[in-house]
Image (cartoon, rainbow, N blue to C red; front, top):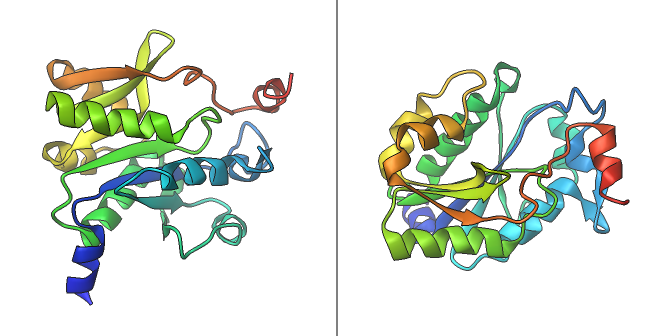
Length: 204
């Protein structure tokens, strides 16, 4: 079984979608918000699945059962983060551990979130393309004068990602290793959904 799995995932980029939060400010699971005749989470998954030579891991936590029912297990790998309440870092750690279980030799991964409605497969593909073109270890998305998700990390940063704690996220490493970072533009990447007002603005 292990041999089959390693062949299935080798030479592919892992796209880890962090979808474990409880959406406390919104008051209902943002993952299930209707968007583009689908949901916010399924839209992100759909775009990630369009990427050539990639596989998708979705990290769930709060509302795990109802969100899981909406997903197709034949298309993606799902995992449950029991420590989701401790913050974003636990989901990064859970997703990365799942990746290393599936493919210990994976050379890079992309961390993405489920509430950037304007993410497209082109954003993911541009990260991968820039990574191969430049050889940089971190390729981040650029928007609103900041760098953030989706962001690609070379495996040399996996250990430090696994050491993240609490609310720490990818930005900690982006700042720490600025000399090894290059960015690609992500138009409307600054738009994410945290409140009902944010969601309503999508349809204005």
